[in-house]
Length: 425
Ligand SMILES: Cc1ncc(COP(=O)(O)O)c(C=O)c1O
Image (cartoon, rainbow, N blue to C red):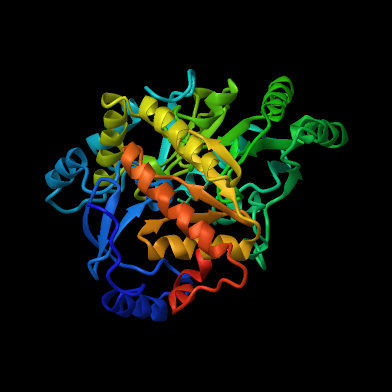
């Protein structure tokens, strides 16, 4: 397959479906201008109008193995009988055990307990609750400026990436640290003022996702780990976007040689997971979820995803192809190229130019995604080849040159769909 755009975007069939969803969905956030037709192969997919795209957005990091992966399709074929979803925390399915067992083969040493839920926000939410349960005198939790942890009220209270995400939503008690080398000193100040026992947890993304693919300074991560260890404050690392091999290691925090007390995973794992150690065991009934551990197909795909990454040595592939891609982006003289493995980003001169670049690339059949104020994230599936990277780089280059021509404006209705490359997760 190769990228081929035959219609204006969105095409006529896509337009009908998207506009109907828009009418009925109270919070539809300007979706991308196409509707998947389920055909696709590897990094390519087709829409219902026959346009073919190359996907460098990977369903926001939740599709690490691309489209119609034969080993994943074989798993899907086995699930022919209803129900697919069981009440997994109360009624048992073997898939629950299988995923837990496989998951703890890749989690950091000592983190060998997990609670499975439905989404990234729930994974973070349950890490927060497990920490609160342990820190019985605690009054607040702490996270970092620019963090994104999800949309439930708990996770959202610790999210500080864009004001629109929080407007009118009350917060759980929280404090904010700067995402730079002064973060450690600030944490000490909070401890000195309030007492360590008042702090339920420190929550962080070591590579901020939605907030702009900002990599934490190594000194900050190490310092925060040291302080939280010495004051017995649980450290939660949110690996919902950066985990499961995206950076070339199973978990992004492994690039910093630290280990958290709790960790959230989701997206590429296909289900949410709050991962921790038995120190954080809670009494029955204190946390639960109807479908947690009972979404059999998702659990089976999550299991197979880990197995495929292992079997095909995809972590080394991600590292190798990640450096090739990063080098290619640098050769295009893009601003502030950064990231690890296949979790890469660069900046444009302003938000408007970034948004135009998303649209121009789409018009040439490349799907990319914005993040932060004026950045583009580059997150292809782990199975990407050099040839596909070359094609994507060519599209980025031509689009970038075009959108930087003074007075450039994109044409057509496309931006009333995609609201110009804004991302939401
Ligand atoms: C780091 C991080 N945490 C939490 C979430 C929330 O995940 P979900 O959208 O599955 O609730 C996201 C989503 O993008 C994320 O990137």
